[in-house]
Length: 383
Image 1 (cartoon, rainbow, N blue to C red):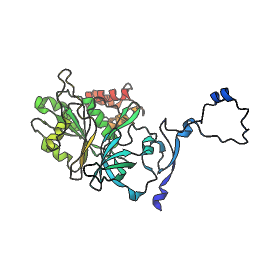
Image 2 (cartoon, rainbow, N blue to C red):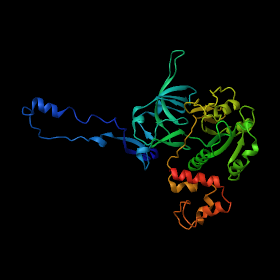
Image 3 (cartoon, rainbow, N blue to C red):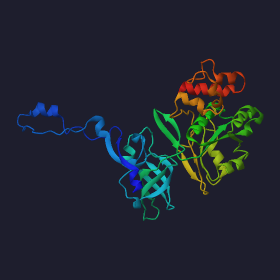
Image 4 (cartoon, rainbow, N blue to C red):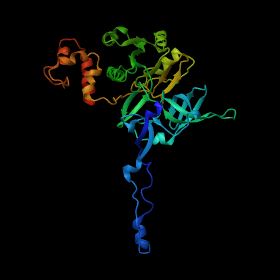
């Protein structure tokens, strides 16, 4: 009884192009050809919704203040017909799901679920917990198929902005492993800062992994690694080629829901292969022309670790535009800037041009790292 109280009718929009036909025919052409003299006069007329109104539909959903973005939609499916599973990968219209019955299913997504209008680019992503209707194959060698009818509420979503929409890279993770190569390709501290801001925003535990340490002298990393370490971020040094730090990396991902992110060519797949040689993930060398990585991993893939945890290998990211962050929030998502915000004269201080400013004073006094402050200014300006 209490469960029904939490479910109510919601008016939600469908995507453009999924509304019904607005009228039954071309009245102008019909009038020019035949006229309307021979037609009886209507005594009553029923008006149907047009345009935006025809794209609305009533569904049953969880009690939410934002129905248009709600993924927690209760469709008309009997619970006893469904089983739960976790999405391993999404390739176009085909989703690979590891189900609670021990089988793997190639699943499609129910039409209504796909057509609900949201700000998200994809309605189903790797890491999602879903309910599916299975269709077990009786033929030997044939694959099991199913239909995803519900996506459970998410947490720990790593997202970026893509053409004005939310591009969710992975859902339901509690540890974000940021892999950065110290050479080939060159280190991008600003990209690390963007991932750290996202981790602070969604509540994931970030880990900074400096890979390919066999290519440089570690003393050159002392300044930047020390800055992150002083802020309380966990920092590890690895080399997939030499096996350095692999055991530490393996212990970090054990029994946790992890995602590995970073630009192309930093060695994400190589690290996973070194930690678990049975994976045999595809890898590629860095381009000799521009010293940038080649896109080898084409889709986010969830790898089950077998000990109540998993890790998601994601495609390389060269640009990471923050999602759902306004300029006024950025300073609060920087751990080192946060303590000095209250020392500003103006409550809406941007920490860029105002005087006096507690953050700028801390930079001048050497209490804040100048590079981190410049990274803050760049992120705020782009937002």
